[in-house]
Image (cartoon, rainbow, N blue to C red; front, side, top):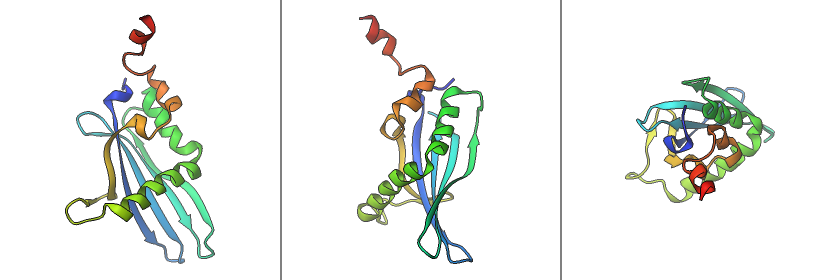
Length: 145
């Protein structure tokens, strides 16, 4: 079973214009193990139609171990309130584009523009979601003191 301290989060951004004129923003969130293997990946979509109405959806998801409580909890988190999660992550995208795009620091790959990489889960995912791992490392030691 994974613990929160064993994993990191990376985020990528891509966008496209569809044949009907609507636009799709794709945020790919990737949970990585310490060996850099992706163990959970989700695509979060914000679709803006031609009248500027937005809709939100979860696209492709993959999970390496569907019996791992933490990975299942994280996968579910992306689906619980997709609009709010996408809104929060889009703020990160806009901040990144406004201040960090340059030839030397910007990486574009299969999943799109890398917005951040290998961030601790605690920085981006609520504690209640991460509690599926049984609590942070050392919490029992702190309570015993």
